[in-house]
Image 1 (cartoon, rainbow, N blue to C red):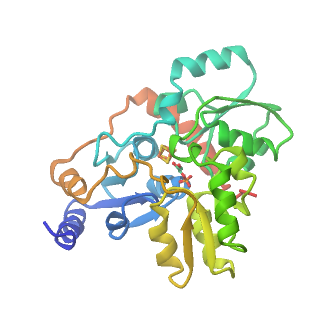
Image 2: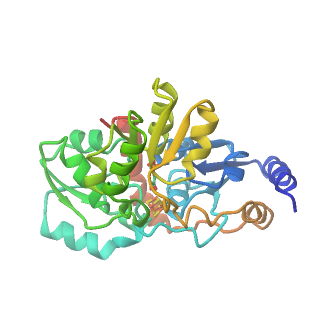
Length: 308
Ligand code: 13P
Ligand code: SF4
């Protein structure tokens, strides 16, 4: 079936089922194009907590759809491709976090939203890449266990005067970008600001002119007067960058800047998800009850765009 035909079918199905389609900024262009809302993890989780729709079709990866379910337990949440996971989220499990907590009693557990629901259930508060610095600053503790991203953790550490115990996880997509690539691009495009996601390794983040979430990067590029930018995050963001700033030029920081999991979801999957009610996110009531606390705490803290 043609792309346009599939897109029209999905839009019809969404209406029929009173469903809302959310898409992360890394999704394929043809998916972002027809979503009701695109955004970063923070924006999508807030929106998921507020929708009136009966069904949420989450085009992203599993932890994002789980967060939507946790925040809207009465709704049906569908992840169109069951294999769309996040390798970084899988780098820590509940048993490992339990052990870490027992080694550091009294420390406040801040978990990046890129965690599985059972890890969230053991956390005090969640954060996203757009609010991590402000959340860690705001928690009422001098010692913080930060999981699972060591790169985001080391970025946050620069701005807070707290002891941070950081887990050794990382995003394979962002971690495999190296400072040499950025230095070469900076020589080739002198004057082009380098906008970087904090999941990149510290040597790469250290070269950035702006460090922020995916939506933060899109906003910055729109508002900044420069006409060329080096983009330090997954290639799916180019769709929104070009849509928001059609007159500007965006140079991807690395050729391999692709998250295979974010690319698993295709239009066919979204149509099948709506037609067959698949793949429904199911979590135990206890997990939902416990994981809701840190997610709601993050949203209640109301800090969305605090990256420095
Ligand atoms: P955002 O917080 O910008 O949505 O990024 C999420 C993510 O998975 C980055 O790899
Ligand atoms: Fe996970 Fe990295 Fe993909 Fe984001 S880009 S979903 S952190 S693997």
